[in-house]
Image 1: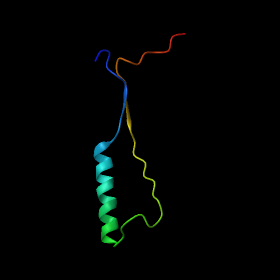
Image 2: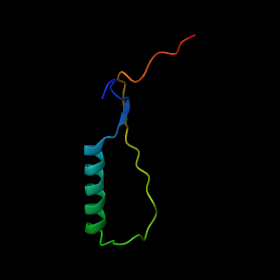
Image 3: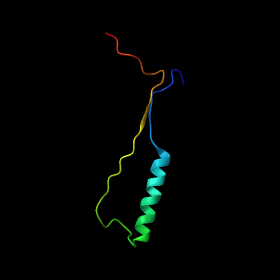
Length: 58
């Protein structure tokens, strides 16, 4: 596609590692289902600027 699209790249490897780690932790603690408190985990995405983004014209 031309020009290349500007995207927000999600950290898929970190998402997978965090998911597996959290799941294994829950299993080892004998927890299942949705009981317990909700957790929020924030991972840093990356902005990949390509040709579809231009400078602001004044």
